[in-house]
Length: 249
Image (cartoon, rainbow, N blue to C red):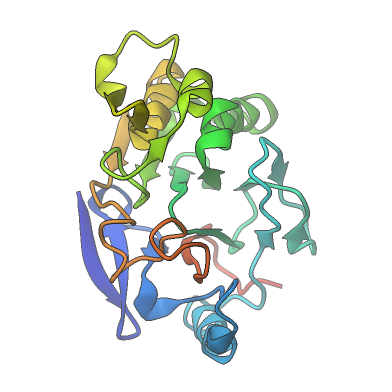
C-alpha cells in the first residue's frame, strides 16, 4: 500500500512493501531536478545535498533519459549514464535517482540479493518493454530471480488523462485481449500505462507488486505533470539506496 510520509520534513510517497529500505517517490515538496523550471535550480541543489547528507551518500547515480529501452548496470565511480532509461545496482550504498513527469516510474528490489533498479517507462518505453528487459538483465547478468523481486509502480499519468491517437494505441494495446487496458472516445484512446507494465511484471513471475493509483495529471498540485503543465515543468523522482554498512565513495 502506498502512503505519504516525510523525508526531513518534505512530503514523499512510500510503499509498505519496501518499508525496510530507503526508497521513495518525491513530490513537489522535494524537487530534485528542475528541468524547464530554472527558477527551481537553487532549491534542487539544496535538496540534492540534503538527500546525500541524510542517506549518507557522497554521490547520486543518475542518467540522461531519452525514452529508450537502454539499461545499464552501474559501475564503480561512474555516476552518470547517457541515453539510459533504467539503472540497476548491486553496489552497497549506491544511491539511484531517475526523473518523471507523467511517465511510469518503477522501483525494483530483491532483498535476497540486495539488488535494486529504477525504470523510466513512458509510452515508448512501455511499448518496447523496458521493464521486462530490465528484469531479464537482472536475472541473466546478476542472477536475480523475478520471484524474489518486489516492484513498486509509482505515480504516473492515469488512463483517465493519457489521451492518445491511433498510432500510439497500435503500438501499445492493439493486440492485447484485455479491453480494460484502454477506452475509446471520440476517436481518441485512453490507455492504462501502469497496468501494461504490471502485465510485464506478471509475465516474468514477479509476484510482489504495489501499484500507485495516483494520476500525476489529475494531481498536479502534488506531482509534476508534463501534459498538464504543457511541458514547462520540473520533475519528481524515484529514489533507491542499496543497503550497505559503509558510506558511499
